[in-house]
Amino acid sequence: MTLAVGDKLPGATLVQLGDEGPEPVALGDRLAGRKVVIFAVPGAYTPTCHSAHVPSFIRTKDALADKGVDEVICVSVNDPFVMKAWGADTGATAAGLTMLGDPESSFTRAIGMDFDAPPAGLLGRSKRYAMLVEDGVVKLLHVEESPGACEISAGESLLAAI
Figure 1 (cartoon, one colour):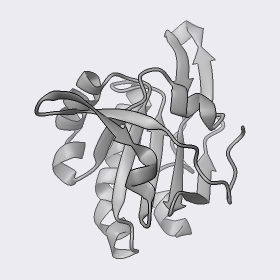
Figure 2 (figure 1 turned 120 degrees about the vertical axis):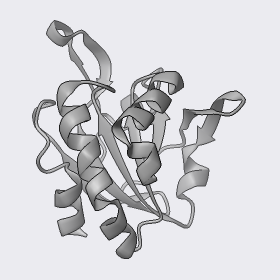
Figure 3 (figure 1 turned 60 degrees about the vertical axis):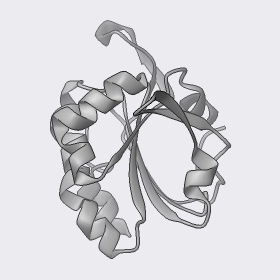
């Protein structure tokens, strides 16, 4: 499947680190009846993800909420321990972003957003994208051509398109 506007997202279970350890997050339940922004990065702590992509959604979270967005979710092919630490280190968690791991890349592969960049040590990772999802259906989808770019998938670009 190559994800497109109008598609319903497939059922997926992502993971977050809770008080008792790793917790499954049924994405379908999170999206049902809600307007949600999902953005994905090639990897936690990688340069563009850390210095550009996450900060763009921290800056725009309140403006997205003003446009009716119920939640902003960051997805990365990383484990929940890394995602929790990264959320704390970037200020994303404090800003109200939800940091979810896709450790097996199952969701990422299911929507056709997986890629490999062996020279950078990135295998089975996610392309950089941002999307607006309403009740599980993709309404806007901005995918970067290069994993090192953060232009059309930045929070400001998605906000402007809503």
